[in-house]
Length: 136
Image 1: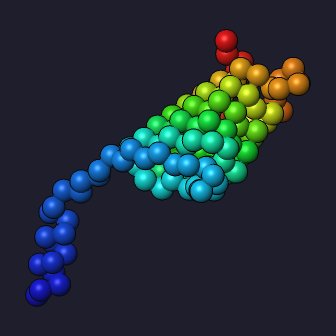
Image 2 (image 1 turned 120 degrees about the horizontal axis):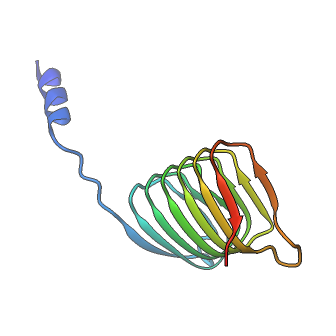
């Protein structure tokens, strides 16, 4: 009888998700995966890889080699991201300079300002209803 009471009690209590706000130093943590939901993350310096696996996060990045958003409904802003991959859904990404953008998910918006020395980044859009465009 006790296991059943415990199971019922566990489902009766509401889940409380604490919104996190973190500042990450890329010099000490160059590769990061975010699995949290509804958090705010600021990356300082040059990172190697950032993966936003959780949902509804806000991410601000100075510089990253590879930015991946497999989660959903995240917002990411990067001054520079060498490669951006968006396999998740309904994400919004704004990047200053990038050389490659891949959108395999659906209903994502990716804006870019510069492709460095090239006219535009290499773009792959295999998802549905994605918007990838140069912004001012």
